[in-house]
Image (tube, rainbow, N blue to C red; front, side):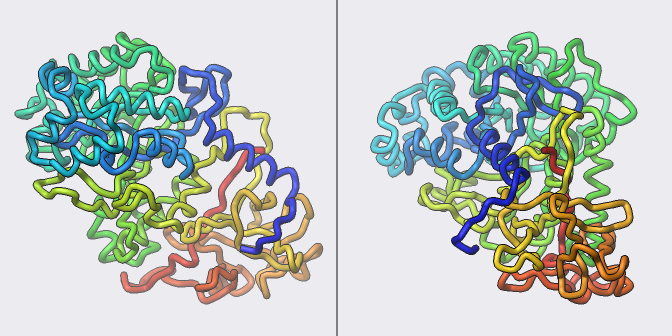
Length: 529
């Protein structure tokens, strides 16, 4: 980007304020819900922009602390723009007193032969190495709290280890390692343990319910019992309910609402990866695949946004960038997340594991940190997250609403060029002027009444022809912006140097999976002033 920055008006100022408020988290705890929004005690919107940090694998210790100090990790989380951590835990940490209180971090590593991690932990976190496992877990929460980072406590599995196999005995109520009474006891214990810890703002009751025993009746029976137990033990926290089929399916609550004795605390969560729909992404035109997936998300639980917050608590990609399905899926899901301004948590923080599935020091290529736990693995991906890290809308109906034109592939937005005010360019979304997108498909700069003509992408005070300023969303993805004056044959596009242009619309319909439209994917996003 051009190093010379010029002010871009009040809208820019307001967006920057939104961004800063989402990072510094100067909100009043505890949190509650108001329709589809999470709010603080002042009634202000609080958006969860989280990163997952696993603590549920065999060592039962938050990953990475043999490579970096816990306070340094917390600082890095904040620096990357996250205001929240979804911190996982195995049920055994709450229900196995010997494991939780009598096994130290050092002893846990010793039992697994992780001698190098003992040395690293001793150097990076000497005050934690001989703490019992539950105390080490509390220490992580406290360190995040010192940086004003919110925490969602997520019961990920019962037995410590990697998740999630369809028949691994951890999947659904009544499985070998999933006794409902023990689970409720563990939820109660953790809720009680963290009562009064202000940055613990929510509890996710169970990760990715799955397996041959899953059924709707038992879901309602036990999830409602678990929710009531958590609320009775700690009425401050949000209660977050996951669905069936690896948390891709909450369709059943559309016709059969959850029945709880408390209100204004319920949040639903969804998960979505490219592997959730591998065949769709591999076999179909990407626009058609994206449209199909978005319908699946809506029917699988997105519809809850009419009345409740929906927390996209796991999504992510291989950040090496070589997986074609991942690269298409992430553009589609980022567009949906921005358009709907959902709360979310990216999978994942860790660049490596102490021990995963028998492999010591395994790298995690979904991790936003590299295996050194210092470097950001993929800086351009962090740019792609930057818009959705900010709250874009909120519960106040008095606020005026404008639009951004968001490009998910780059994480940038369309804005007026500084060097040539008759042109448009891509730039940081928090520098964008407000756009209006009228019912007749005209794109206009709100504060200057300049419309975007589709010949030469020129901004004009009086468009020479009404049709020249019409931009219509087309294709099953609804992410192609097509010029109506060309009979929707030319679409807004971005070249390899991030220059805006108009080019032939790609993969509109009927083409196979080999076509690639993602440079042409844009989403018109509503933003409150």
